[in-house]
Length: 173
Image 1 (cartoon, rainbow, N blue to C red):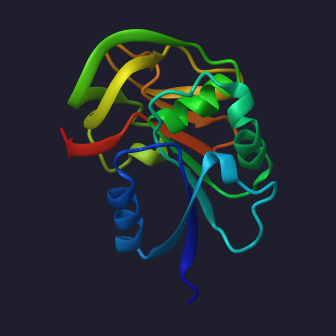
Image 2: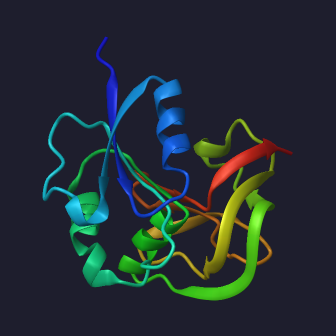
């Protein structure tokens, strides 16, 4: 059986080694590139794309246009983490708003009818570093999880190919 390969787009995350290690523990090989170096087409060697978090550029549509073009043109699953989710949302008309600075584990409520959450309780504790929060799902996407400060903690494209999460789950409740 061939090993799956994931393209990890590093948008400036502090957790790149941990992110790659986790995919490798799950049996996938990873290749990492930065957002400024994304190819125009994905090619057949990758079975998924992961967009890491970012600190500063989620609003910069021009900078991320090649990345969004790659994501939207690919036919593989895409997972945006933290700022990666925000980049996807902003590119599709989503609005970010300032909120309280949060670092650490925070509770989010998830939609249990979503297959993604079939093995967790109705709330999950997610670790992230945030000051910006997605205020609504953009056209073509749905909110599948929320918290006190963020109406959209988890995001899913209507075709079920693209998902976004605020950070890494730390424990189930």
